[in-house]
Length: 635
Image 1 (cartoon, helix red, strand yellow):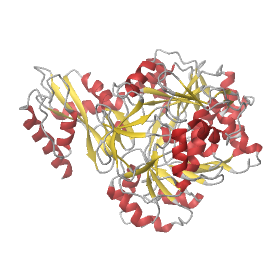
Image 2 (cartoon, rainbow, N blue to C red):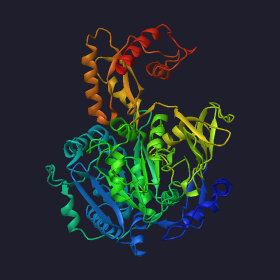
Image 3 (cartoon, one colour):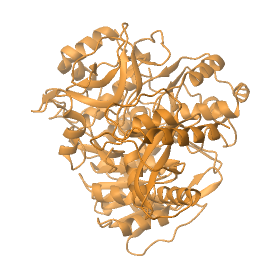
Image 4 (cartoon, helix red, strand yellow):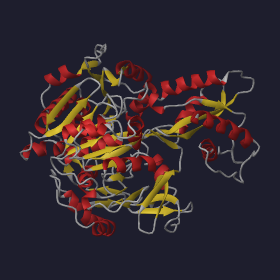
């Protein structure tokens, strides 16, 4: 890929002449039909990118490298300390597996535009399934394996999927997670009919297959004829990825083929300075956007070797696991969430385990997904003497809105800042009325339309929700839902969410969805869920509940029952901590629950009593309960 030129020049051109800038980036790809223009603006100011171009993302990620004579290079390195298996898969081998998996899906009736649910652990077949869908022009919907049956059923119905790809089990350090019973329960609960369920039988636990619907993955793939890549329009959907919404109902973020491929290829160079043959490791999961962008599509489109790791930063077997992987495979860029490094620091505060390994090829550490707290940043800098790059992006954008752009030459970092907006992202900080605030003043972070390639094209099946959630509040802008400020040097600082999404170990979760679960309990009249600061996971959800009149139940028993409800309905990944029973919830006179005030009290932060509060007398009791809990937790 062409070396990035001058950041300021590129940023200016991407703002002033996006047609030329992005067409130049698009020319790095081998199109089936080259687009005649880069950008088409619709009546809402949204951009459609490369609308008349035709391509196939899987072909660009696989066949193109084989055709260029690089088929023997490793495409994927699979490392699973939980089962003791390591496997290297070349570009030629991965192309063959994907084409046969696509052939298998084709025999099941899957074709262009059909939706396929992928509910898989971190195994190579998860990547194969994603790319096989892309090869046929089908739309994959990957669901993180930690979600419970109810959440899977919701996504089956929303996507109107016909086929599920799954595995008999996942492995969580020292226990098995039986996937098939969860999938069976989700299929039974969903309104949408699943025609076929393709099951990867893992030797650790074989699932019972339902005759007529369930299919053995390996046998079916081996019997299938390979399928050629299907050229699709650049604007056709590549995937739908569900992210938490404040209403409790997940939002299906739609990503296209063309803009996505261009953005992934460009970002691999501009943000990460990754080149063909480099070993790139995003220590995430394919069920999240990081896994989509930087385990699968980004590295493969750029001709890198991507590490697929089925393990944890600790306990597989110890806090040196990340450094072992980096040394063994010559990782150049490591990307993970701050939570992972907090866990490592907790187990190995002096980083002694890292000294067992040769980390000479590791050049940079990238962190995203949640706030990078100063102690973790300082620990990494002190012990590893590498650039520690905090960059900011969202499921909706698919790649970094702001970063320290290694492809343009790293800039002097400022602790707590994601550095500068990337070319294509016009970042503004606005007050609640939509007016720009001065530098150094905190406000709502918004992105001027049109958004660059690679960003969401809408919400699956719900354009009204897309407009209402992202475009209505600040006309002409995308509302990010994050608050922050830009300093006098142009550095962007992210302060936190402005909505009811909390970040648990890098997972974005909706407090509204948890409140729906709590509110369904027979004893609960009213409830609220807030995010409470946690040293390891960043935030943990805590419920505050008001009992129905006449109900008698011990708080400990209720809390235990609510924990089980959340685990069953949402999943263990929510890490729900239980509930406190209170007499009243603080509200405004219009009935809005004052979650921010409760969160500030729970975290021991200064707070002010809003003039609009309906019942100020309820705060002292609430504050005492929350402060007692905080001190007990600290003790």
